[in-house]
Structure formats: structure tokens, C-alpha cells
Image 1 (cartoon, rainbow, N blue to C red):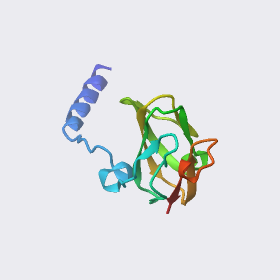
Image 2 (cartoon, helix red, strand yellow; image 1 turned 180 degrees about the vertical axis):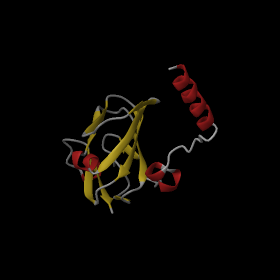
Image 3 (cartoon, rainbow, N blue to C red; image 1 turned 30 degrees about the horizontal axis):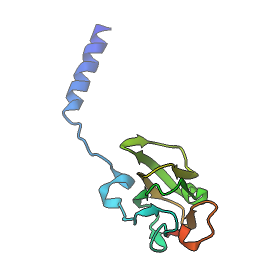
Length: 142
């Protein structure tokens, strides 16, 4: 048993010299990141300036900012099922969810959702119960 432990320790020590920190590789690498405009949750104001187009297979960071003028949510189950969510960051706390259907702001704040666009199609994020076109944003994954 002592020989097995010694051999294992030697192998681990030898292989440690070859280990490198590659950071995110593949689909999460910095070379595979796209830009997405910030979304705003403000009573009576547009969520975004217009429709958003994303590329399938690219990593995006959706930044949502609420001004606290009201308790507002953003729903879009179909959109969230068409992407793979890597993390949600709220006040510096990282959450790694299995899935999302909606997010809600009870007060002013910022939320960042890092995701990979997967399934091509046209989707919608909207403030539930709203009837104004400006209270929704169309997102197309191509």
C-alpha cells in the first residue's frame, strides 16, 4: 500500500508541472463572445431600442437594469429554452440555474445573465400584463 501511495504522489507531482490554466475554452472562450444591448425595466419606457439579433453558438451577456419605479418582471420562457444559461449574477452573487422562465425586480438593481444562444428562431421578452409594444423586445437567434 505504501508503494502505491508513493507512486501516486510521484505521478501527481510530475503531472503538476505539465498542468496549465487555459481558462474558458471552446464555446465559452473570449473569441466566441457577442455583444448584446442593455435591457431596461422602467415604467412606460421601452425595454430596448429595437429588435435584437443574436448568432447561434455565441456567448452573450444580457444586462438588465431596473430603475425601481415599480415591481417589474421580464418573462420569456420560449427564449430561455432556446439558450443555455451559464450564470445569473445579482449583486456579485453568481447563480448557475438549470433553467429560467422569468426574472423579477422588486427594487432598483442590475442583473447579468450569461448565456449561449442555441436554437434559431424569433422570441420575445416582455413585461407580463403589458399591452404596449415598447414593453417587449423581439430577439432573433440566427
